[in-house]
Amino acid sequence: MLLVSSLAVGAPGEGAFATGMKSYQRHDFKAAIQAFAQAVQQAPRVSRFHHWLGKAYGRLAQRSNWLRKLALARQTQRALEKAVALDPNNAAALADLSSYYEQAPGFLGGDEAKAKAMRQRLATLRPASEQKQ
Image (cartoon, rainbow, N blue to C red):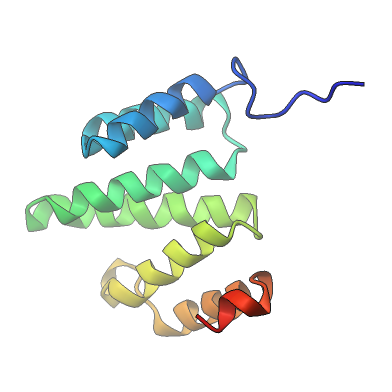
């Protein structure tokens, strides 16, 4: 019996996600956000799509003026939190959410206690060999 992967070409959102990844790699974060948002719309329960949408929002925020940064920071947080809510074992999303909580000011959702909790959760997912690095 042949099992079809959720990553199969034609799976909902995969085409948009692939487009988003290409845009992200070119540092075209606006285009990446559009593509990742489309992937999320097509497959709203895929953690990976929300995670990369959050990463793209964060990267665009780094390049934006302070007013735009505020809106993008909130979108970053929401997307990363959604990724973790959909898949609590998504180590990459946990790591990025922990970084967000560490770096963001409190009025934008930054919270050292939440960051610490994310790091502890992440440590339980990583093999001992990775934790020593």
